[in-house]
Amino acid sequence: MPELPEVETVVSILNKNARNKKIVSIDVVYPKLIKTEISLEDFKKRVSNKIINEVNRIGKYIIFDIGVDVLISHLRMEGKWYYINNLELINQKHIELIFYLDNDYMLVYHDTRKFGTINLEEKQFYKFKEPIKKLGPEPFVKEVNGLYFSNAMSKSNKYIKTVLLDQTKISGIGNIYADEILFDSKIHPENKANNLSIDNYICIYNSSKKILKRAIELGGSTISTYKAGHGISGKFQNELKVHLRKGENCFNCSNKIFKIKVNGRGTYYCEYCQIKY
Image (cartoon, rainbow, N blue to C red; front, top):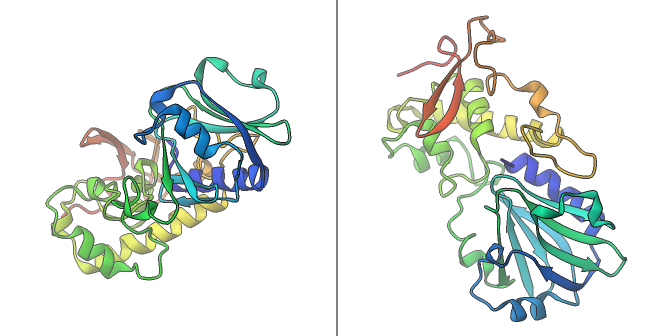
């Protein structure tokens, strides 16, 4: 599943290729992709002949600025955007949406699982509406620090791994990076959030910024079927310390990495390096 670093990489690719291109026409292959309550004809009218001014990101959401409106894309499990001039380059069975651009290229949304979503909202209001309004800030925001993490999370009696994945508290942290952040901060994933100290939360905050920054620098993690597209593959998977390393030796203490389920999510950790309170 694409997480914040992977989505940041996708945004960079889209800006490089599709920015300032006009959407001449649209083919909505899978209408359920569009989550805004609007007819397909009205959707096409509001998006056709609009220029993609810029592509941004909020949390794991991709924001296409098309003037008065924005398109909000969430890739979910396996969604991908392709900038191509020939549909034969991809598996056409999983194409859900095609934007035909004014340079004879296409911006194609492709999703083997069909979990992805697109919303069309007015630009001046979209941050105050679903799905964006519910998102917490990212770790990189100036106002966010260890105290903010503590205030946002320490009242919960859920596992800290689960709370880290709650996008309403802090946005952008997914399963891969939650494992890596908790390993880096030496905190067991099954610690209850309300049992952690302010010092623990300062560590989690610092690790969050460090891990996500490094993952962005390396283009994210290319894991399973996720690809950033256009020949770009993430390289952070080469630096993973615990995620997907069940049974392998810990880089710090040489003991075996364990895998458990935390609220249904596969979770990797070192029971010697990560303290359980």
